[in-house]
Image (cartoon, rainbow, N blue to C red):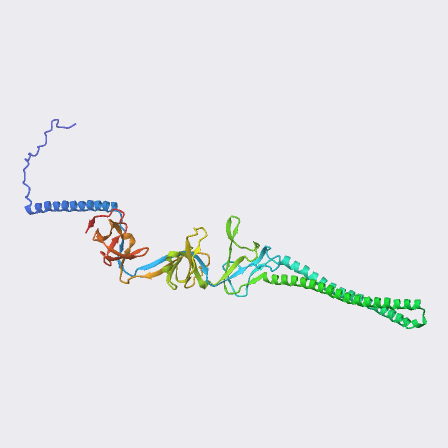
Length: 452
């Protein structure tokens, strides 16, 4: 417990009254600079926002405008071209045909035993086709046996005929002896009675007749034997010709290439599909089984309408394309034009075409016969300084011809005067200058189209 129960409070400090101190005044130039800076920033942001918004609006407008394809007018000669479609063939080739037999069996079917693979290069004299000739060889052996038998029959018959002649000669000698004996007896007829003389005379005549008859029989026998031998000889020769004919046919069963080239097996209709001839197939005599072609003499065979024949001249250049190889482009020249019009298989009789051939210049190992191809034949050239534009840029309206020429960002419609044309290009005589751009898709709405 404290000794002082009522302590005195500590004296408090005297309260202080707050004094207001005025703030220092800022310079007026600094305030103006802040205001104008803020306004400038706001202006720049507003301009940037407006430009961004305008760009977006322009982009939307440009996206809504259809794209316009254009082409430049150029100075070049106008090429007149005619397209010919056909197939590739070879000018130099050799047909490998199935042999045709020379006898009555000439039309019988045959079986392929061996053949060169299609697409392989073969040399002159190389065997490219072999026909199964075992059955014919067996037949030749049978006929040869018949020939041997005929030869034996001739030798045997000659011996038999010689024996017959000798027997007949013996009979003639006997008859001659009897005749001589009777004649000697007849010399003693003065010593005989009249009846005996008559008997002797009859015996002489009988012996002489018998002898003469045997002589005649000898002549007939020789003629008969000669005829018989001739028949046997003819029979043997016929069998020999039969045998030799089949031997010659057997040689034809092995076919060799007559030139160097590419072996191309010919197509055949097998069942319901097209195929190529293979080993083991049954083929007909005279059928072309293969071709040996010179790959450096390829050409395109096609037909043109008879109304176009006056446009073609031998030696005109051509650009050749092959459907099987889209990237392939070859040069060629018109090689031949047919003299007579021919009728197509499925066309009307009054529709005639002219066969033409375009020789391919150069060599490409991928180029083989029977490929569908096309040739763009250059049939003529125009003025070397002609102004050309695509025909797709021409617009015809009310008997007049127009183009849409590009002028800045706009397209201006101009009336033009045209000249010659081909399938793709047209000559502009006035209205468009070289180097100007013209619209191609004029059928679509054009942006800002003006007329002049």
